[in-house]
Image: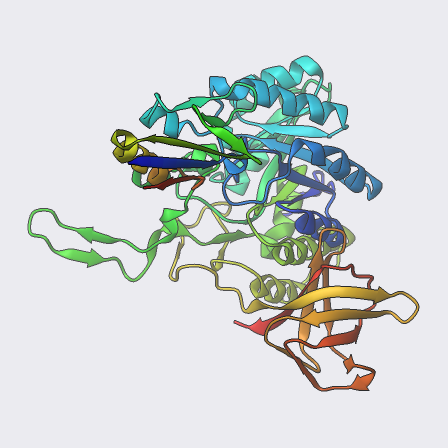
Length: 75
Length: 417
């Protein structure tokens, strides 16, 4: 079963927390200082990617701890 | 003793976390506004921040009204922020923003390189004259740590003159202090609490304000739990200096008085700015009085506050803590509806009532990005040209309003809290 990660990027405050917790899935953009959801497709500014279930636990933590609450995980 | 040689009119600096607040601040009579662009400011999470493309309009609007513009760019900066920081500063310079408020040295350094005037943020916690001398290479205005007493602030201003400490502009360094608004439990905001408990960094503008909650202290040895005198021991009351503003202006010689609150609503910004405008003017023209203070205090209490105290300025107390969670405002806004039309010739505004009821003699507030903040009383209401004493949801009502309002402006009733 796949897990969907959604990133509402516009309101990201670039705090680095997601990259710190899951650097394989997240990186910082030097262009605008916000985080980038690796492998995601852009749907009108909302980024999403389907990943394997083994990433779920880590990404759930990322979503919970994002201070701007711009990351959602759907299982 | 009042010393008169220092009397000069300080600049009143108001917060703008939205277009509504920006207009509310201008209407309130501020001399300058401060605002954040994108995410690199201390209200990244809570304020509805402006974007780079808004800079031109912010500057045009403010300069048209003779109001200066200060861009707040005062979070800690990581490597990945450098490019954005430079892009924001370049845009700020190009759109004739008057200054940037900075705390990270990278921001000061780049601003200096491109010739952008710098104000040193309170986040640098300046508390002594040698630090002022250090930052004088970068900034012309310096915001003091909020924990200094007025005596200390006055000494710093005098010492700047004595040592002739000048900034990049060649003029003497100007000192700015906070006049009104929230205080932190950490020295001027450098706080780790929000990050520690909720992974939400205050120093990146994401403070979740967990200091404002109540806490129980547990004795780990025997498990006793203590709730400390029902006080929110980490939540300081709000700073209010309106009742000793004469001392501040006459005794310290500060150049800028700042109102805190980019995360607060437009009515707070408007009411607070207006009160401090009147207070500063009356100190200068000699009409500052107890009666006036009572009136201002009453008005300040109508809008968001955690209860007031004089901060650390008078040096009497260690800290005054809040005894409730949230606001002690005596008035609250109740959303009623949205603006539809304004008939210039008649001075009548039309609103669609979308929630609650509105009655004759109700106090109302209208706010919008261009309108700013307008307070009125309902003296007459008409629906389909019939006079009414009450209107309810679904109806379209006409109300005489002296100030022009716009389509999609928000109409609120000011109810007792």
